[in-house]
Image (tube, rainbow, N blue to C red; front, side, top):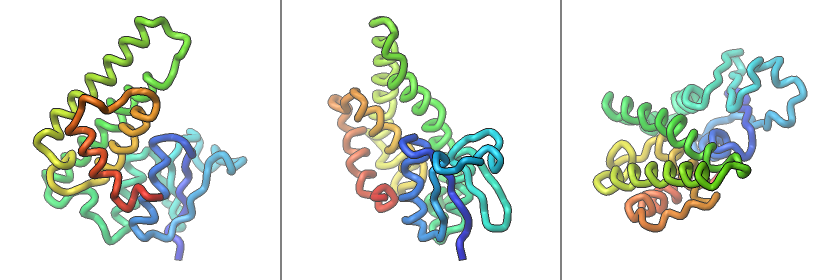
Length: 190
């Protein structure tokens, strides 16, 4: 029996990796683009994605909550971390990706009409983010240590989107190695 429906906005880094996660988790979930739903705001009035509606009527929005709910429905809760400290660290890194990394990515990918100084500032912000991550991965295989968590999958998605939009990872060898390591996770194969 289906667990419910996952509503996504294709192309968005908050959403694009979720169908692969659902598949990896082995969940019977229908995945629907919000672009294909005429009355989406009647289901989720804020119109945000991702969102999830369970067959029992339970509804949840916000990427962190949707992802946590899906993982808790699976046989792979270790993606949230194994110890209390890992779980809290996973939440911290997921939040960091959703805010700091996401905001940096959005700023980098928008406003082509900005002055060269504004573009240079945004580029410097991306490089500062990459330096921070590179330093972290100098001593840590994954964001939480030696085991991959869902925060890694989300961070991978955002960093590779920034990279694909013009900021190379050259000069950040630990971040490059991390991206290469995470890229083979089955949840990212769609």
